[in-house]
Image 1: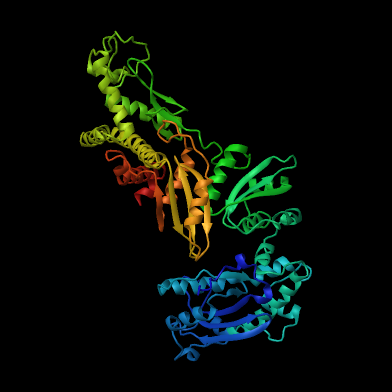
Image 2: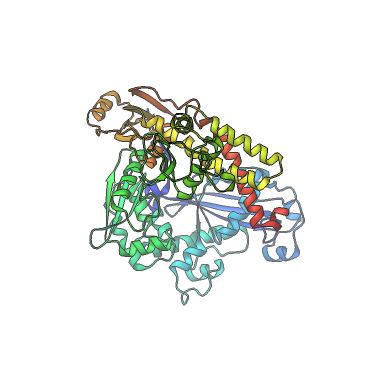
Amino acid sequence: MSLPIQLSFDELDTPLHGTTFVVVDLETTGGSADTESITEIGAVKVRGGQVIGEFATLVDPGRSIPQYIVELTGITTAMLIGAPRIERVLPSFLEFAHGCVLVAHNAGFDTGFLRAAASRLDIAWPKFQVLCTVKLARRVLTRDEAPSVKLSSLASLFQVSTRPTHRALDDARATVEVLHALIERVGNQGVHSYAELVDYLPNVSAGQRAKRSLASGLPRTPGVYLFKGPGGEVLYVGTSNNIQRRVRNYFTGSETRGRMKEMVSLAVAVDHVECSHALEAGVRELRLLCAHIPPYNRRSKFPKKGWWIVATAEAFPRLSVVRTPAPDSIGPFTVRSDAADAASLISAFAEIRTCTRRIPRSGTHGQDCPPSAVGGCAAAGAGTVTVEHYLAATERFLALANGTDESLLESMRRSITALAESELFESAARLRDRLATLADVLRRMHRLSAVASIAELVVARRTTEGGWELIVVRYGRLAAAATTARHVHPMPIVEAIVAGAETVIADDTPLRGAPPEEAGLITRWLDSDGVRIVRTSHGYAQPIHGAGAWKQWCGAARAVHRTERYASEFPQRAAL
């Protein structure tokens, strides 16, 4: 028998009459949660307009009560003698409120004190849904109707039976009645679920809210959504595990990005593509971004674009930075300047020429090139060499690109150490940053090419519901995907999706033609917990002398770089 799964309010669209609220009020020794303490907690648990439980206790703050607090609440120091301390009260309250929506009048004050107490006691604060009746009142009531939203003023407006007295339980009971009166008001405006109430709270334009109907017919499944303009053009592409819920958020106050508000104002329809699971949705999003280049997406619109370092097709090859990868190349680099710096670095240590004149196969290199130290050629130090001797320099680059030799990286690291020992710290830092960029790109390329080199890889991952997420990967691309339910044998479905999987024709570039972002998305999924290989055409392996072992060094180098950059930009703060 499967265990029931507790879903969030937003997933269930819980009706307001079925939502359990815990309305809480506190009395304290002062106004600051950092320096003052709780003296009384009162809470009322309600559902469907009915009280189903109450919680009330005085709390010993471990100090005397200020006179102005005594005059306000009537709670004296003598009344708190023998009262439990907060370390005994808070766990009981959290158990009382578990799984409920926490409600308070000026919720920031009450939850602030409760969170501060939990922090001091080293108790994890639960992820409560919190509703503030002050904010709800300001949203529902006009200024003419309610010039003030103090609890006493709202109690008078709604003529509640329990009057606020600045005692915790009385004020919590009064807040319950105010809450019910406010919910009755929003019910007349079409707000009938807790999720709709949360969406209603922010003050959004009527036009933005009116477009919520665009989300009404969308499925609550993983997939990709496409906002479309008046001419059918795609304005924005996104992905979610729950398409309807995510799209609905664009029409509420929870969406604060100016570009997205502008996009929503132009949208007239929302199309969607249902997917088996989040990985398929992510891959399809990347492909749709590439196909439509939507104007309101900032990232991943050109997933195949990048910069690659290749060796030119000459008798005496040079390194060139290009858009299209070659069979033995290094990349992709996001920024061209990074690729150019890396090419210059490799050339210097591999003694690959940087001069641009053409040399015939029968010629030699070196006789007319000044050394790189005076702005000349990186290979000038090798002297005059023929094609046969120069071949060793090219092979050093190819070995670095293919992961068969990391001696170039080691030489660069030794140079950093030598520069630092000579107290040439700025030169050492520049070389360190360039090496970190190069090693990062190599490490990622070797990692992705290990997956992209597999002709067919069938993988499964267990879902939280007990079924399986299935994928077929061919040469680094997602060729098919499916999900099986709990207690359903997955192998017939595996055979079906393999038979219908997309045919992929690979090339001889490092990633076999796969878009780097798609291959990266798949590789991260393969690294997640619970993944099992169903079958594969051959094994997954990264080059033993590749840059895979440089991850920790690159991370440390980048951390030092960030510290140095902060110190240079904020010298006074860094000194502190």
